[in-house]
Image (cartoon, rainbow, N blue to C red; front, top):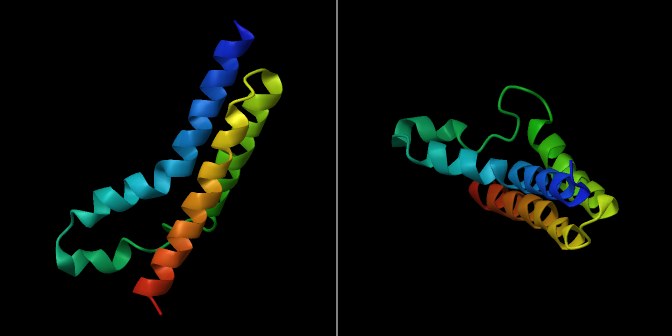
Length: 95
């Protein structure tokens, strides 16, 4: 396979890992109000799944940048911003 194609696939998977929390949040935001107390939990029943996905979202674009597509270095900012936004949102919802 072409190195650039592999690098782009790895980088896109990293972005998907970074944004998975927000996709999950949007899905559960459509639930009725009596079910919404569960939608903001970070653990999802499995400890550390969201921090692990954000870590993968940070590492995969860096790996993609090392393989050959240097623009993926900028994509490594997405999980940092996503994690910070989730922490800020959770601090306002659950003081």
